[in-house]
Structure formats: structure tokens, C-alpha cells
Image (cartoon, rainbow, N blue to C red; front, side):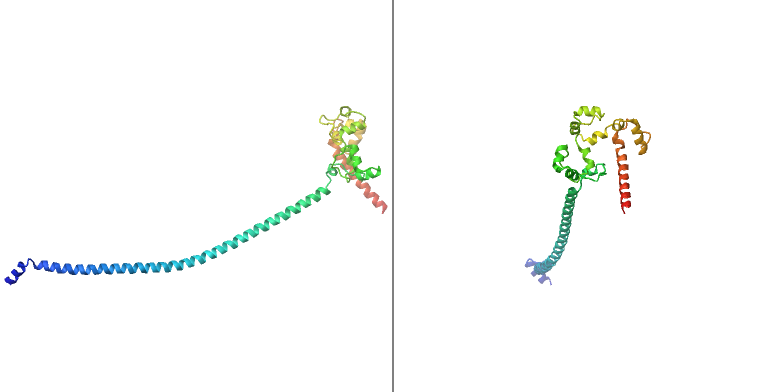
Length: 261
């Protein structure tokens, strides 16, 4: 035993050193194999993950494409439906505007504003009727009386007098405008261009009727009230009197028709 021990010592080694070397070799070999296996596994894992990623990505991409196509198609359909609705609405509005415009043109062509000034058509005649009775044209009467240029042939004859300018009426009386205003006590706002209807409305009843007894009879006949005096302006009672006169006119016409039957 002692000899063997010495032999080992002579070789410069010890039992512990030998074991250590053996263990280290085994560990080193095993570690290298583990590292190699790990590297191999890692490469395989990366390849697998890459393959799976490509495959999954390909499938996901296909799925997303289909989903996007469906969504885009639905969006286009919705947009087309909305646009169709907008176009339909716009078309309806355009048609409505054209109808209104056409109706307005017809209304404007037929409507006569001068027949809606509060003067009633008691005579039953128009400007055209008066022109024919006097062997004149409508244009000639308009020029002679300086009537508004846009006056129509179907304007009531009863309205014509009230549309004549004060300046023209003054010429008929053989006087100037200021003389007429003073004589008839017309309002300060009346000018040469004012209509005779406006001038009359600014005239006191004492001047308009020219007699207190006549004024009293008018007040009683039309039941105008005790507050009406000679200082009251004609324009204040004219609508009431004109309306009553027109109603009486219609009643007389109805009576005449009944008697004729």
C-alpha cells in the first residue's frame, strides 16, 4: 500500500486530482452536449416559430383581407345608399323649387295688387272697359292720367281715381299742388307724387263733406259713433264706409237677381 502511494506521489498526482479531472471531463462533455443540444433546440424552435408565424400570418392575412373586403363593401353600399338618398332629396327640392317658382310666376301674372287696396269694385267695370267706352286704349288712359306703368287692364275702374298723382289732379283743377293742399287742407306729408287716394285720406271730414249737416247724416247712417267730428280724417272712416257700401251693393244685386227670376 505504501509503495502504491509513493508511486502516485512520484507521478505528481493525487487521488483527489484524478477524480477531479475525471469529473471535470465528464461535466465538460455533458455541458458541451447540453449546449449543443440547446443550440439545436433553439434553432429548431426558431425554425418552428418562423414556420408557425408564417403560416399563422398567412392565415390571419387571408382572414383580415376577407373581413376588410366585407367591411369595405358594406361601407360602399351604405355610402351609395346615403348618396342616393341625398340625390333624391336634392332632386325633390329642385322640383319643389321649380314648382314654387312657376306658381309664383303664374300668381304674379294673375294677381293685381291695385285691386286689393281696399277700394271695392262697385261699378263692375275695369280700366279696359272704360278705355273701350271712350274709344281709347289702356295705354292712352295710363299716359293721360299718369297712372303707374305696371297697372293692368283688369284694374277696377273704381280704383283708377285714387291712383292719379296729386300733381295731375291739381292740373285738372287748374291749380298748383300747394294751392290744392291748402284748399283741401291736405296733410303735410302729401307731395306732388302722392296719389289722390293718399291725399283724400289726409283730408278732414269737414272739408270732405263740406257741410256739418251732411257729416251728421253720414255719421248716423253708417253708425260711426259720437267720437267722429269734422276734424276726423277721411282715411279713418273710409274703410268702414266703403265696406258697408259694398255690402249694400251686393245685397241690391242679389235682390235684382231674385226679382228677375
